[in-house]
Image (cartoon, rainbow, N blue to C red; front, side, top):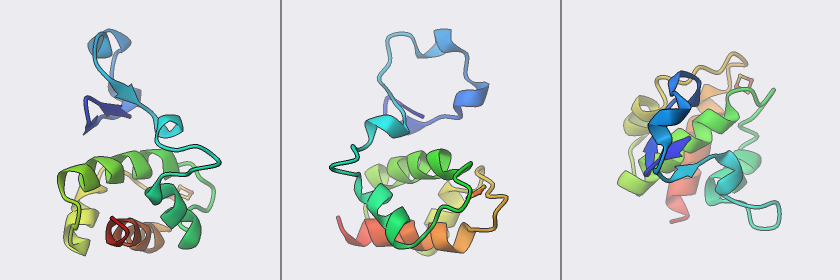
Length: 104
Ligand code: FES
């Protein structure tokens, strides 16, 4: 999730810590009618297989693109390093983030 614009692991964050802060989850990034550019790029690059990691990947990428609108591939990989994709979709995920960045 994004907490005041920073990517935070929801699974290790107590609820009291986000009290009074702005929280954005994957559901808040876009809508089915108007998906966020990262969501469109993930679809275009077929970057989700089982989808287990997708929310965290997209949220971390959203925080990165907010800080760095045109990151290098190395910076994308660095930003996503804490997120594991057990399906092995990492290369497609990186391509999706770079695609989204190119659409800004
Ligand atoms: S798509 Fe299955 S864990 Fe990433």
